[in-house]
Image: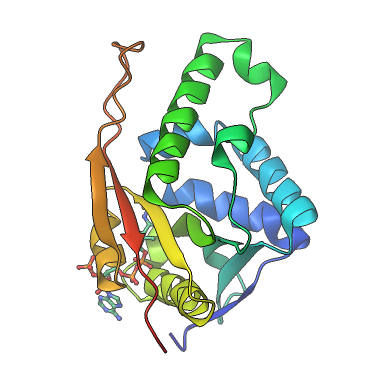
Length: 207
Ligand SMILES: CC(C)(COP(=O)(O)OP(=O)(O)OC[C@H]1O[C@@H](n2cnc3c(N)ncnc32)[C@H](O)[C@@H]1OP(=O)(O)O)[C@@H](O)C(=O)NCCC(=O)NCCS
């Protein structure tokens, strides 16, 4: 990792952070539903840092030779637990105004329902992870996951993540196990594509 430096991402990093996120997830069907566009994503990241900065950590990986952000992660450390059922995914009012908005909300609700089934009480949520395609397979993703797992162990918290088929192996290497697989096929949306996801849990390890 000497080519890269991992550090906290702040509000001023969000334009580059989000641009990298969208380069990495260019072919991610669930990501496209959760984050319809970079502007929406940047607004939600900004809100998370401003409103929930004591529980939410954004890390960036920076290329030492260019200074560019080439990877990132969002970890949420819910020390007092998190009421997913009432907070859900914080839909915007316009979510309901279009068919896509309604579908998006139903998918978000299905994901949140799985989180409720996986964990109760204090826990860490790995909410977002990406590495720029030009910088993958060099250990950036692993480093970002490793940091949060260390925090979860230090504070004795179970961690959860929703993994795409591409991400599953990486999480298993860090101690996550598959709790459930789902294609997130919602019966009210028969025409929509499958969204294969592994819902994974990691028990904290004694230090
Ligand atoms: C999943 C993702 C974050 C992984 O990021 P990454 O920085 O490539 O991750 P790593 O480099 O730590 O590990 C990836 C692989 O490279 C290997 N690797 C790590 N360092 C290496 C090195 N120096 N040389 C060669 N291979 C290396 C790892 O062993 C791992 O192998 P595996 O896939 O066989 O398990 C990245 O592929 C990505 O952004 N994908 C699109 C978005 C996405 O799917 N995010 C996750 C959602 S669950």
